[in-house]
Every structure is written in C-alpha cells, then in structure tokens.
Length: 68
Image (cartoon, rainbow, N blue to C red):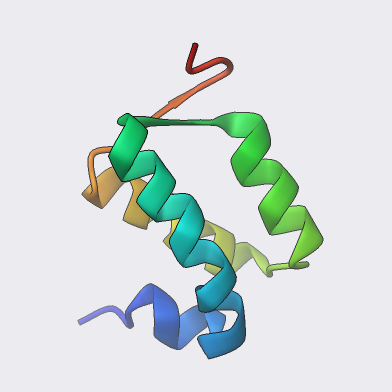
C-alpha cells in the first residue's frame, strides 16, 4: 500500500496543498500554473510532486492551461 500524500509531504506541506486540491474539486479543474507555482514555492521533491498529481487524478480533477 502506498503512503498517503500527507505522509509523504509532511503535515506542514500537506496543509498548504490541501486548499489547492479543495479548489480543484470545487471547480472541477486546476490550472497547471497553479500547481507548478505551489509545488515550486514549497520546494517539493519529485516523489511528493508525483503523489500530488496522483491525488489530483484520484479526485478526478482535470488539469488545464486555462480553466476559464
């Protein structure tokens, strides 16, 4: 069984990722720039970024260049 995103990212970083995922669920999509900006700002390692994209996919959130 793979670890949950919160286990990989750590509580502090997960707390900053959760609102982005919530927004994506609310809108049904996220902009790639939003995800890239936050992952860069949090200086996430490759494994954590991969887990984030897996979580986005699991929540059936679409990724687009422009959600508008």
